[in-house]
Image 1 (spheres, one colour):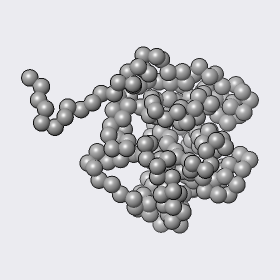
Image 2 (cartoon, one colour):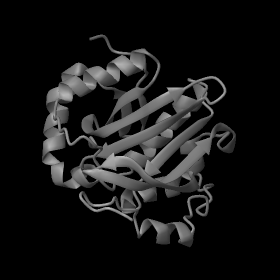
Image 3 (spheres, rainbow, N blue to C red):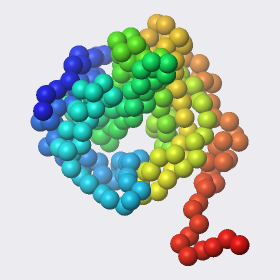
Length: 225
């Protein structure tokens, strides 16, 4: 399956490159080694179907990329696979928006790989794809990911109840976003120069409180009268 057009983007030892079908074996190994680390944040099917077909997943992502709907990328550190970043739901026209998700291997955590990768991918989406808005949605319990959006100055936009099926159930998510006009000098440069407003990603206490009490479904066989 042919690759899609995307340049290698880098900053120091950290780089982003397109995912390739031949990455399947190494990606599967990384996912298995990091299973316990990643499971709480892993998207699942509400139908209860589970699949670990990494090769099939890559084929699907590459098809979406060639259709202009996504950017499936590999994050590397000093040339070694460190994680994955995916820009999905790319929409042009009056919306010109996309969503961004990622994971990083436990042994590479704390090296600045994720914020750098997110910054590079967001800048590419704004400058090269002409997108206007990038969104990141994060589970309230995912402290490392919340730290990423705070570092990069993504604005907090609200709580989405039971938004994405994660780790076997519908989970609440905090939503953050950036628009192109907010970062005229670039996402990465703004972070490196210390120009990020740390209050941009601040979550109101009311939303934290609401997220601490998730909405539960009615148990099977239970009826409300």
